[in-house]
Image (cartoon, rainbow, N blue to C red; front, side, top):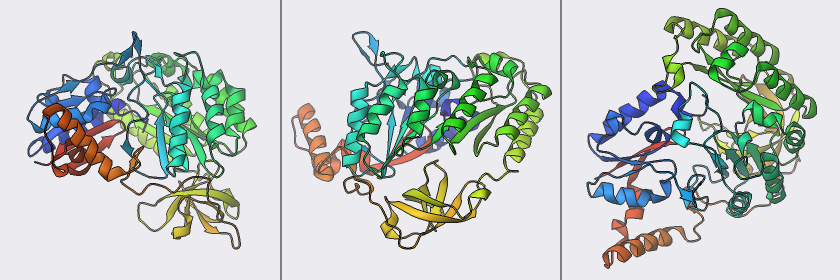
Length: 462
């Protein structure tokens, strides 16, 4: 997937279906980029909606929804006329994985791609100040996080609106990363990474930064890229990939491709196939094009559905025809263990190149740096056995929060209750029992249904 929910039509159908299903028996609050981009959609009528910049007011919205009121908060936050970057970074939150902190460094983007609704949902670029991001990282390590992911619609554009740049932020973050902890950089488009190739190569080579970069190319044809208004050519993409592969040996480059964009010819698609054959990307996100209402691409002459389907299938077959990890059998690697595999048979770890390594489920490994020897590989993973007599290294971090504990709150449960009671008391001048608190409802009685990146449908049990 491209990482942007507002790009994918099938996901939107799934999202809409779940909204209607939940609405039959429960009150619903819809939050994120989908309602922000399409607030007038029929299935949202009468529902409470929170936009991407108003999530810090979720308690207020849930309170009103419980009372049967419909609330819509879709406005952009501004300070002295300047657009702010999303919700506050210091808001309390519950991490899905207590060992991993996900930090959005900016919202919005500078581009105007003809197929994408992100600009409609997120608006223009708005970056968080470096000091706020560094402080959030520090707080995360104090709470036992051993891996930080930096995310945004385009991390490479960071700082262009506030007079700084991505390398400046990354060097500051590297200073506060404890030994044994790691930083992963999110998606960046080619034009912005081109400006900082030398610095980025140095940063990606740092021992506490994963040598991994997600650079979406979308097509191997310059003609298609021009119709997409991607603001770069294939040669620019090649320059980024070739430079980083030369300066950061072993680096993992992930990329995205859209199959069947309007006007894409057989020759255009062949150029895309040739690009994949040449680079054999270990991580490739393949998307069949779907026109989004209101985008310029939706008004272009469309490629027949059967052709789009066939091209998507052909590219997928090419991707699965090669195995990027076969040569690594027998290698020794240091890997950071952060989670359990889907089948609960292994722990999941990642090496310096953010390649997935499955290790035995030994309790002492969770949140630790372990040395393993690779004994088996698959298309998307390797398996490693611990090296005998090797040290299991514990990152220089605090004890991780328990699953479900709230980040930023020292005494989670009592504080949740006191926050709720204080808020309600302030408004109604009366004492409220904790079990009836609005904030308790938000964290305990909500049935969260995550339907895609940045979008949440919450069903309130009544």
